Length: 571
Ligand code: ADP
Figure 1 (tube, rainbow, N blue to C red):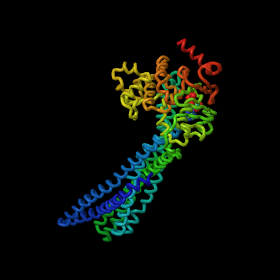
Figure 2: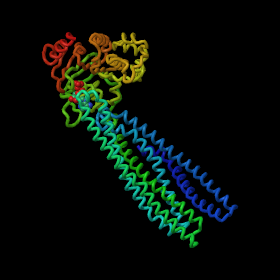
Figure 3: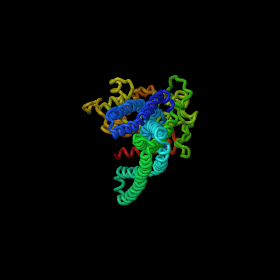
Figure 4: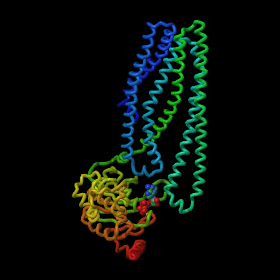
């Protein structure tokens, strides 16, 4: 991904770094000008003094222009990089299969990704810049000191500095590791607090406040310990480095002073030299910071790459012929498990469904009903030869094409905080009449009439302004308005009362004439009129037939039916 970016924007770094080097060079002129001005002032040479002092101003101006220039090229480019990465990341994320999002790892990766983009941007902006800046000003200063002033003085004064570099890098690493540990402790602690707050009812109901508090106290003390260890290491950093620099300054001052007294170097060089020494020490501290950000940026980059390397759905679909998809569904001996090492979620399921027909799937919770629909939607990969839509193996059809012709209504149809009309239309080009008619089919007519704002009623966050049953019906209308070839209802009417459910099923009849429909339902009344009902138990199909046939078999279905009837009567 970086390669594409560099191809497009990489050229910006050339003028950027060139200006940066020029900027460093101009900066290293300042000590010379300072030395000269001081010397002239001491000599009371007013005529020569003013132009010499003014040159400091020119230097400042030069630094201003070149620094602005490199920042413009480098920092702007790093912002471009951020946008570029975010775009790439976003398109990648929406193309990842649903299976990816159900793994535990995905949450972590996503949470990091947002921050990671920022760190990678830093890497390609300020981290590069600080590095080039530090190295070039180090080179210019040292060469000016040794070639222009006095090589031996330079050598002696710089001798302690490698020790500072070692401290910055080694101690810096220790500080970094301890900071990370402290941060981890903090996440752990706040995670537990969050969990306890969310589960407060359970916590109180089981009288677990005290043990939980003890646990909290223990973690809190551990966090304090981690923080102390971090601050302790960090506290050493500054004094140690300052001491090393102090030795350097002392050598420069004493040995340099001696050389001035002996008439070996001029006063201006003596002043310039000491000024250079401060210029040399700054990059050493910067290098520590560069190293920190470099490590962070590289770790971020590796994590982003991991995410970007996850295969997207379109890569699964290689043999698409682009033709229209039929409405027939054929499931042959479908066996499926979610992950290696887990038990089968479905075992040897077979059925066929023609347009105009309805298939009901019933069974206890966890028996595999929803899995059938997830697989038809291609949310997970299945083996070839098991699932066919319109005669085509779904492995040969892009997921997007399947989802375009399938209307899927989950039990908890997600609504956005927009109007009912917008939620039903949801990126389709249905007009208001079509939206209204879909809502009527879905049994919302009476509800809409009772709402003062009708179609304009806002649904609230996650649809929480509507009742569960209303949310389900709006979600059903959303599927209907797209005129799907295949309609999949996953316990869609579970929160709707019996009478409304009957009405909706009656309304749907007309629309169902031309499409294939699978209805999963907890409540058997929703599938009573289906052309075929399959009963799943423990991942396998245990009974199948029409409502009447199943009652005759007098097995699981008949048992569930009797139980529900009893429940209805007592309700
Ligand atoms: P039902 O719809 O009949 O309640 P499901 O199809 O949701 O049943 O689940 C069937 C089995 O598959 C269950 O044992 C469930 O725990 C498992 N399962 C469902 N979804 C996933 C998933 N995303 N990852 C792993 N296992 C799953």
